[in-house]
Length: 430
Image (cartoon, rainbow, N blue to C red; front, side, top):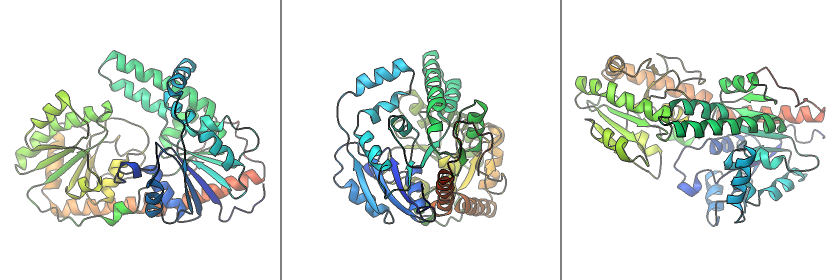
């Protein structure tokens, strides 16, 4: 390959969905933030897998990402999905791949990899690699965003499941993703992960590929709506918002609300805690609703609304993989944040400077939280420092140049017939 596109390459960004536009566009979306960042520094065409009729979605995407040159929907075709899922189950592969196989995506990928106007193809999720393996002939330089090491995520999830059947299901999923990682990650010229810990895990398991760490970016709109908070309101407004369908989060949230929150309310009787938990029902919902000072809220059109009306954010994650998007967006929104060690892992945050570390989710943590909440100057300083950290390290426009550097290095390697992607890489590229 020549060097035509190395300076300012043209990127085909291929997304598994319409980047949140079909859900109202208010949620935080890592792929949307990547697209925002890279389209600010080089030419990008967007191709997204349409969940159905795409009328209006194309225009909405063009409005939201004005720097993107072209927007194309990948049209799906119905039928065959259940049989495909069965075939994948028998082969021990992740069932989520069935969605791609039952669509018209393969033809789109084939056209992108033979298009002379495209320099680099960037898949926004590792599932695309399964279809990529079915392409024949030469392909374009390929970047794939893996986000997290999914086999590790499911292994950790299994450890927190309350039932034996659920734990067994997650262990099977972990095995399926482990097979997928070993077989397909090496197909990309470079795999992008958001956390060095996940890369170390994959390299330790002998997964082959070139792995590059780039932070999970945050869209600029999360900083633009940052409200000025005085933190002097006696009604201290706390927020819990996280994946309640994941036991490593729901268990931590329950520990905080039952063991820590009552002591906070005892010291600050006017304190209130909003638990943003769309879809949570049953006994857990009833338990949360019975706790004094706790209010449960559900779906909102714009996720930023939940952060704007609160001052403090608590992220009681017990374990997990990757970087923790909710903590990053809370800091971007100017909240004073409290987080466990797992919640702040791999983000480069300085405990005591950018956020407050909670070593335990118990009554002792309540003293730390109450002291900070009762000192407006301390809370304001923590919030301002945390915002500056994520603005410098996680804002899409700050992360975009890192991806441009990755595209250029990949093109350069391809032009000299390097690297040898059959070898596992022990080093983490940053």
